[in-house]
Image (tube, helix red, strand yellow):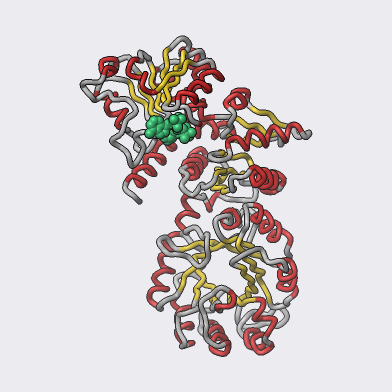
Length: 539
Ligand code: NAP
């Protein structure tokens, strides 16, 4: 079973022991004490091991391997030896492959404190041989792995390198699966999260996480709390299906929190990860192709956001054009953007757009009508960007009489022409008489929370009298949940719908496509509102 290991940088005995207690409370299985700058006194290390709340790994990483220990090898050796002299032993001692190969003295001394399968000993401490590269995938990675495997005392092979792209994670998974000894293969940096979370899916010996609030010991380490809560560590197994949100950047995305909570609530065996891919189509194509190509990954699909919505469409079309099985939703094709990739059970691909579906469902529910009931209704769409495009396409498709109002008239005209809508300048909005108003501009978005695209509250405004019961106002902005536009509209007696509903419903449509289960809308709303509250508070 893959052990969730809390990495603790030891500054003092009490701090480290306290951190281990916290790690245990959070649900970690193991702790790694990084004693690089802890002490010169070997007895301190013995005491640390004796009093540890969790079984431990002892590591004293030298500067030349990316650690902080800059003393002499003799002292380092003595610290490591003393880790194993007490009644309680560390479960593992970690040593760099290079140090192991370089020094016969070190090999001889360490061999006395670790378990040797050939010679029965009192200790069960295992030896981890490790190698790290904080800049790139080392060109001799496979040689190193082989040499660790061949070292008879080495119980665990560990390699970690800075990932250049999401594709590196796949090599980490393969390495773990190919070795005869327990193996840890981790990718560092923004692209490496999958190797850490999915270590359990592929049967790695352990994965590392930081203790909440700590910096961790390597770039890209999630916290134990994130592993257990957000990424569903306890539920991950070899069959778990993998989903994600593809974008650049994606660190701020609320989708992992929403979908993972949804999987938990609906009992779906899935996990959802952020998947950063740089903007160019070639990156998108190479990464998605490689993830689709790895069988044991069970990659089930992805939400796709800026700047890849057009790339997804192109990718699935090219895939179909070159003999692959797949399909693009007709309306997504007309919109020119897709936000959802679904890998169907038979391996074929499906690209669709749930943004328009989310907007339609949000408004139809607000009006208590079916989509067909939109036919003939007068809808004013403010803005002519990406969100407006999906909204205009969706409403026009169901027969609504759409007028696009935009600051740049030409863009409104182009949109109108494509989807059979009228186009007007933003200034003409004051003379409009629509039944449904949809804001698709960022006006009123956090932090400009006192701005509004329609001046409903201004008593001199001509449009003011038009707003009242029977008029529906939908703001696609979801941060804040209640924009000034919605507050003013509600004050005038209109039906108001927040952008959170569109967000929740586009996510729900994805969830239902991937899982075949009804999305737990209440859970989605709760998670989103909680996240937004924290964002607005600057957390
Ligand atoms: P976009 O492609 O950049 O388009 C922005 C549109 O807003 C353009 O038409 C632009 O007019 C107009 N605009 C921007 N600033 C303006 C200003 N100060 N005055 C007048 N018009 C202005 O952006 P997008 O992707 O469509 O996103 C727009 C909004 O939709 C965002 O606020 C986002 O929160 C929301 N959204 C919500 C969801 C959801 O699930 N709830 C999903 C996607 C987007 P010009 O053409 O003249 O530049």
